[in-house]
Image (cartoon, rainbow, N blue to C red; front, top):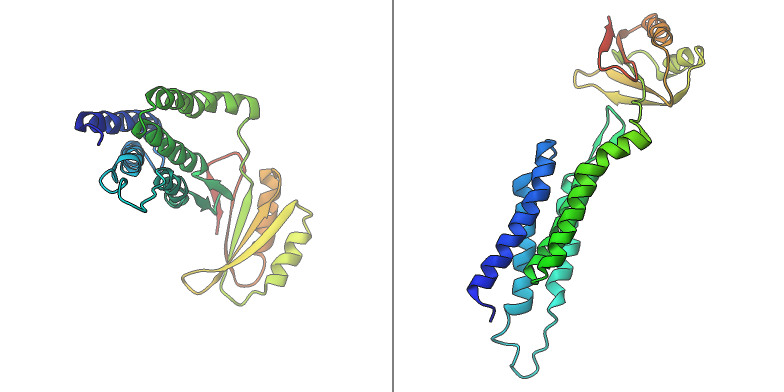
Length: 236
């Protein structure tokens, strides 16, 4: 059986290394921060310790065959459920957020497995590389790739009597780069038509479209957002 001090050292190493990654994510106020990453790292370390040493009392029994890698394999696959919980689709921006956090949780689990298995050098090296990827490469990526512009969008709120076809005809008359129109039911019983464009549109053109939609019967309000501004212009 592995000594108690060695168990503590492995768990503490996993907690410390995972905390380095979690601190970076927590500083940016992502869903999974310091404590989440540390819990994942310590849990993975304990899993590999149990997998490798927890069955020492029965391994010498007749007809007992154990695979110490089975629990580690389950950690790698099971962490995907936790990572999926950090991924969300932001409907307003039409983007998926949390993929990097989910990936960092998965990577931290492997760091915990390495620390729990006594591979301290590998765990430290992996932590250093993960930290560089998360903290250092992000500003570089922004400079090389640039920040993706948010798609402009326009939302027309109807009282339920205006047919969608009337909105479509009005939008088509302005010849704007519309990628899709989404119709949803509002909690108050009316309908909300969200018009999404596939490239930037000048604010004056959006204002013209908003005025055109306001001219339809039963259109309660129209609001639109310019792709590169945070201010939301509302026209009643």
